[in-house]
Length: 316
Image 1 (cartoon, rainbow, N blue to C red):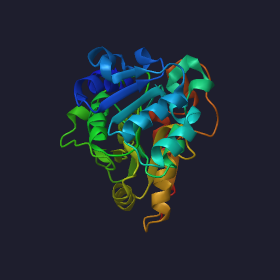
Image 2 (image 1 turned 90 degrees about the vertical axis):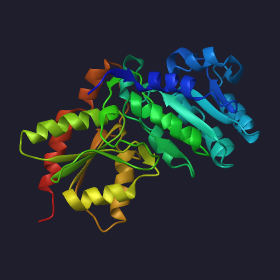
Image 3 (image 1 turned 180 degrees about the vertical axis):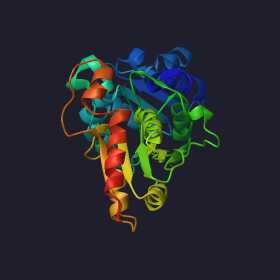
């Protein structure tokens, strides 16, 4: 694995480096040092707007700019970017299909000491239920940069989920890596079980693969950076070829990646056992990020346990 950087920092740097298009505008709710939009603000002050702690207004303003041909990037913590302004996103952005990109930083339990009120564990679920909304959850800095590039080319609403803490970079050294919205990436081949992960759980899935290898179990690892549209072909191929699935996410197990994968499988001819690694329909707690990951079972060890359980449930 490579250097460590938070996906929010990678996003901020990519935004400043890649968004030289004069039609791109960035909006923030008084959190530019946290969301890392400060880099864009310093470079393009005429296209940056700090609307203050008025998230609903921010989305409305961004939507208004989009009606005039702009590509709007809206930024705040994930808990506010999806929950506090759900109505505005649904009715002012998604319903008219405007070119507004919602970027929620500080997602999941790894927000840490800020506690349950700031730990967005429902944001993927909220966004993927909105018609026309694309949902992207990059696993590292390099993939985040690729996601920003892709979002600029995609017309219409998108939700990008980023995290607070630094994560190891793994995708920059993957042979043949190519980021495409709606296409999962196989990071490691395997025929015994498939681990499908997003966000920082991709790194945990790769570690789990090594744990399983010591037990003579060969696990496939898929980086499912796009939750919507989900890569149904990738999921079905994995199910057919390995016979068991484990989904891994720093999110409620209801409505997120696991649910999206289950929806694909139940409609296909590839019904196989599926186990879920995620937060089990509870709120978060204040604590150190590493301790919280362990508390909620978001670890390589737990993924490996679930993989063995899924394998025992395989059809004979």
